[in-house]
Structures are given as structure tokens and as C-alpha cells.
Length: 371
Image 1 (cartoon, rainbow, N blue to C red):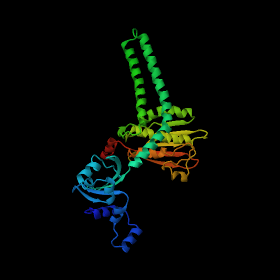
Image 2: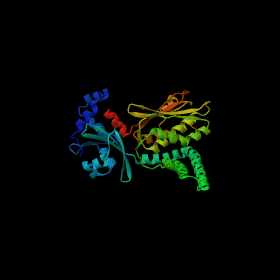
Image 3: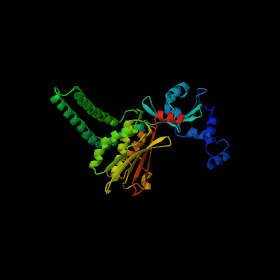
Image 4: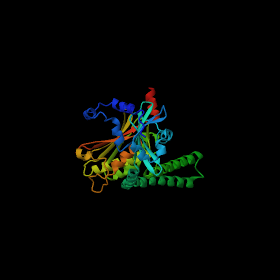
């Protein structure tokens, strides 16, 4: 049985901010029985409207039950509310995107807030899509892993040599050094161990199937550590990689591993675009704009044509002889999982800007609301 108690409310609300198209108007005039519900009943996306105040299912289309494959669940407000909305915080604007593991499948949901009372949910079974993306991400990881290992090889060597030297000096002079000098050498050794620990933790960025762990992160510190890992690789390739260290930049709410991988993908693309350029340069800088932090990767490479830009985020679309066309696809996916976004600005011969928009930390958002 279809539930339509609040259906006309939903239609009115969804139409409120949008002028009715001439096609819809003429169609309604020709067929008085044609209504908004026929569209939702026949699209290939599951649609659900929950009335939070009355604690009832206000509307659902037939595809919703087909996606869930569970009649009892489809008929239960409480179970649907627990499955989809429990623990979810709506973003300041736009829908909330949620991945729901259900039985042996993965469901993708977009949740729209319609006033305080209603939630409109669009749902798809994306299990196969997730499986293919996991394979693609594994392939992409192997493409980029050379950047990391080159940096790790160099960065681990330095602290290990420093630690070895400090321990050797201590062993030779243990009886003659003062307590303060011994403590100084111990602190130096612990700092070197800390550098190695960070490098080992950074390798977790390549754990393909790990869940997102969103945290408030100091972007400047994150970028300094990132540059320490990849800078040497670009220097050896003759590319000037410059990071404009942000001053008083806001903290961002991200998964550091995911941003790490996304930046690697963008730098790999920038390096490829710099082939044959006389003075190849990549600049990275950050700025706050419209309650977001924009992290920009800019190169002076060959640029991208309008035709290429239309297909940038399509899988397996590439102009590189040895490319797989997965880097930007995975980058956008990783950023979307952090409520972040990416846009590309470029033209032939004028280089490329890759602009990542990162969400502010909850503390920063609260400070702006209070001010």
C-alpha cells in the first residue's frame, strides 16, 4: 500500500523554490490526472519521506521497497529512522550523503531536510559500484605508491642516522656527560623516533578499505608533513614544489589519510602535465572563503582543453599513454566522503588549478555562528 498522507505537502515544498517548467504546465493541462507522484513512483531511485513529529512514514515509492528487499523494514518508521537517520547530523547546506551497510549490501542515501519535521531520503543499492571503486582505488594506489616510498626511504634514513649517531655518542661519553646533556641526547633520539612513527602511520593512507575517521586537523602542520614526504621526489624530477604555509588558517574537519591520497593524485597529474616545460613549478596554497578552506594546487603545465574537462571525472578516461583514468575519480570520491569537493580550472597553455574545498572544524563553525 502506498503512503500518501503528506505527499501533496512534499510536492508543494519541492516546487516552492522552483518555477514550474513549461513542459510540466502543459502536461498538467492536457491530463488532469497527471500528478507529481507519477514521477516519483516510476523513477529508478527509492524515495522515502519520514514525518519526525508524527513518527510515521509519510511517503515511499515502490522502488524503495525493492531496494531494501525487506517488507517489515519498509513498513516500520522506527526501524527506518534507526537505520538511516540515527546519529546523522545535517550539514549547513545541501543533503547529507550516507553509506549504509545492510545485510550483504551497501546502500547509498541522500538525506534532505524539509523543515524541522520532515526528512526526504533518496536511496540506491550501490554494492556493485562500491566493489568496482574498491578495485579502481587499489589500482590507483599502486600508481601513486612510488611517491610515498621515495619519501619514506629518504625520511626514515635521516632520523635513523641521527638516532644512531646520538646513541653512539652517548655510549662513548656516558660516564663523562652531565645529566642535562644525557637528557638532551635522549630527547633528540625520541624526536627522531617520533618522525619514524609518523612515516609509518602515513602508510595507513594506502589501506584501501578503511573507514573514514574525520577529525579536526591543523592544515598547516598536515601540509608540512606531507611536503616532507613528497618534496624530494619532485626535486629529483626537476620540479619546483612550493607550499605557501598558511598563517592563522582555520582548522579543518577531514580524514588525513584520505586528503593525503587525494593530494598525491593531484600532484601526480600536475607532474605529468609539466613534461617538457622549461621551468616546471607546482604551487600549493590555502585560503579561507565562504566558511570553507580552499586548498589550491597550481601548475604551469600544458593545461586542459574544454573537451577534456567535460570528461575529467569519468573513470578510465585518460590522455596519458600509461594512465588508467582513475586518479580524479577516486580523488572526488575520497573528498565527497569528507563532505569536501573539488573543481578544476584550466585552459590550454595556461596551466591548471585544482581547488579542494574543505569543511571547517566544528569549533570554527561555532565560533563564526557566535560572532
